[in-house]
Length: 352
Image 1: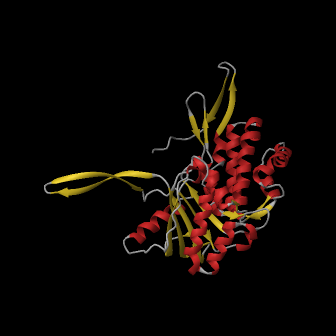
Image 2: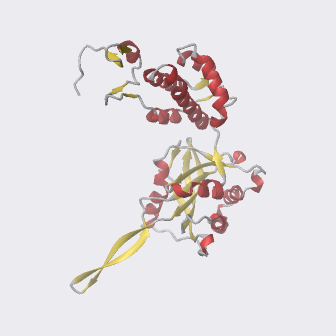
Image 3: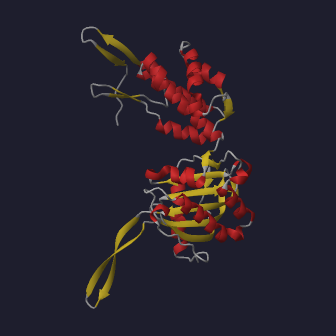
């Protein structure tokens, strides 16, 4: 978990990259940008706000040939080893980004490379490198006075409320390729930023395994539990799965299956589904791991607990008290109407 409240921008370099395939130029600033009390807090909010509002999915530098041959890993290592060199190294990073800017869809823009101090990651203070890019320009009006008349001038500039692309490289887990967070508001060139420029893959930590296993469970519920039983059981299966993760610090697959899979006929189906689908989720040999609470909380928000019926009626099941669905909701078949029905028991209607 990150805390950026006390983060300080110790150094900032600003360059510009064009689209190389369109023969647009690259501009490298000769000296670092001189910060002042007016622009510093605006820049800090511009750079860091997207990471405060984003789910923490970490990445790491990866290269089959080895990290010693990875350009961005080496640039980050050089900066962390000697922060005073960041401006010169920022030119190499910008040149690397420019070399990847060859697809016609890639837009020109400003590149900001910052050295960040007092970043808190998992309750540990450390430094980080921020690399950000602004691409989309917005129109705005600037007014001047001409005697007793105001004149409007149409200008273009960067919207400080929206960062187009950015990443934070934390000085943590160097041997594994550093821990990295990334944001990208523009999906038309997603491979350009993560794959071509950064050269990263998902960081396989507790958060990664928790998230992937819960996604695997969600797909199992949709692909196996729903066809075998019904929507109610699909929802309740995922509710039991999330609650199991929420109340345990360590995941154990045997304990999970015993508690969550109530229908014993689904246990071999679960094992078969994992064997067939696990490479997709990278959980082939995963049977035990520490549970990341942040990933469980994020997964709970995404799981739907609503049964949508084709008669324009919705039934919302309570994840806080799942036993109510077992006790007070029954599914049946009406021969006369030739329709399924849900029978709901209650004592009184609750007031809103």
